[in-house]
Image (cartoon, rainbow, N blue to C red; front, top):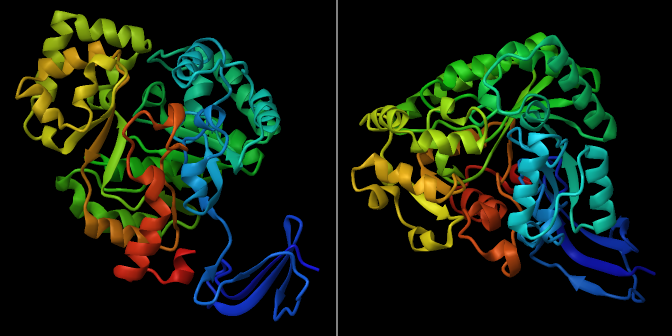
Length: 437
């Protein structure tokens, strides 16, 4: 007797094989049999005629490291059919967190209404187990966490002792169960990290048969150089490399896509992920030059208030070829007094005066999130067609209630996988249903 019997379904099994008609018998929490099943005593029967049954989806690029503790149900992912998330991306993971990295973790947890009680990845995994979560988790160790734990936000090369400590911390995370390491090379301290330093860490990842995922150093003006760096890291360390949210950012860079493909198509061991939207999202202070980040947020704030430094930043950001501020929208704010700016373009905020942007960041303590409209729909479709590209939301789990409902979020938070199936499979037909699943 089956606890659940799904009748007359079309099964798409995730192997890219053609779909086929069959029944599915489930006992307890496991599939017991697939075929033509006659079981009149089944406790529950679902008639899935004209419906598709497929495995749960894997969100290849997620940032639910903290939100899953604020609300363990992961409803924004479950409702899309996601049953597994890859967390710890872009160099930012829940652990390891020591020294300055631990302090930063406390700030993040405070915003979600709980306390950061762990430091090691082992302790974090134990907390997830004790909490009970509604989704499967695969974790990466963030290179940013590891470096901050050892060096803070210093813009300098590590000493031999510091590099040894970073390798040891990475080994501990991998032994605890991490599947690899991620980097975020536009964010501090990733932006202070040399390629050689990354190669040394990736050699450790290779020893554990892990992967290296990277938010590359550039996705726009230096995109091709950033890909060269990524592939060099893979060749010199032996590790499998995975490019996070592969894109051509900024209209002047859209024409580089074929050159991107020429590099990736001819590399034997590379994968990538992408979300199905032409707008990205990250912290608004990502528009600042990277040298502003050295020393952490407190130092960044000091520089934003320093008259001479402000003039330098204003001059750099005023370059008409650098940024169209109408393509940047404020998505969430830290300072409640600024809530009226949510959903508005930065061009409305600054009205041609960059100093207003700097003042806004000061009032926000550099905690504003923004959406950047910078990508090509045609390029997106070409990227999605590549066999080495997987689907990742680049979003943390959210809810329609409680602390995880308070900010405006990018549509990818709730819509990534429906967007693939409804728009790119059913309407645009750039993927078959079998390819998409």
